[in-house]
Image (tube, rainbow, N blue to C red; front, side, top):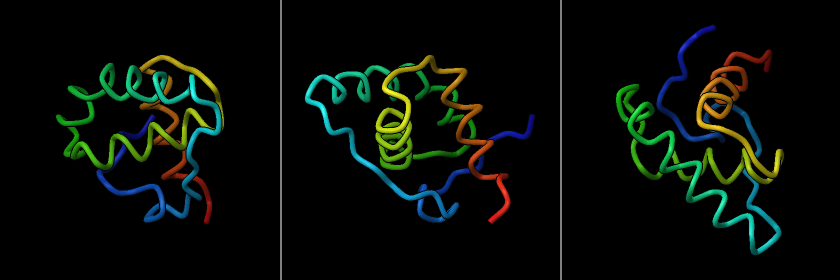
Length: 80
């Protein structure tokens, strides 16, 4: 699977979403923190990681860091 590239979700034509439930904000923090080291190594900054995590959690409610990173790469490589 291709590696994700550092960009904002909107730059990959992924509509950004924010979690609608209060409890999901903690899930965003946990997911972003779990994937931070890996995504920093790929060139992502903290803002990009946070925005991708918000969109992922809004769509999926929960997930693991590896699943999150793979989802970013899949979204970036989806046909426009």
